[in-house]
Length: 133
Image 1 (cartoon, rainbow, N blue to C red):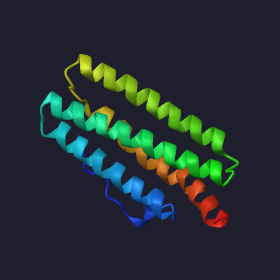
Image 2: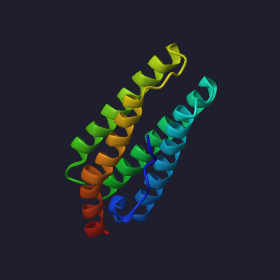
Image 3: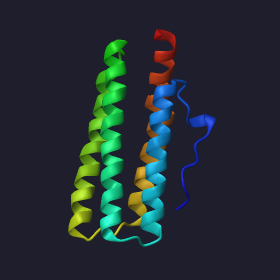
Image 4: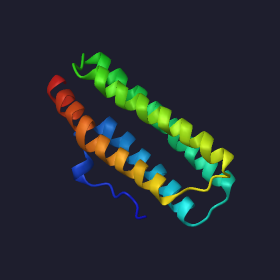
């Protein structure tokens, strides 16, 4: 599967969120490359852990901004965050049992979730924050 390429389409117009998204995309791309190239299970595990940890931090960052600016759609946005983290942790546990054999469908799911989340709910958050600041 090809990498996610950062472009202005993915920008939400808030530099600190865009910086987080660039970092998440870079880690996703490394995980994708590692899975495609047959890197060791230990390397895949470490990369997935980094991706999950960075995602958790990023979600906290976004949620802090939502609280600070009293974002009216925060509850739904948080629910989407929790859904991904729960799914990622479950997937991580399953991969650990399977020796980190990653299927292409799992990479496609992460790719779609990341890009669709940025292009929908994060775009709405970015628009709100641009007006709030």
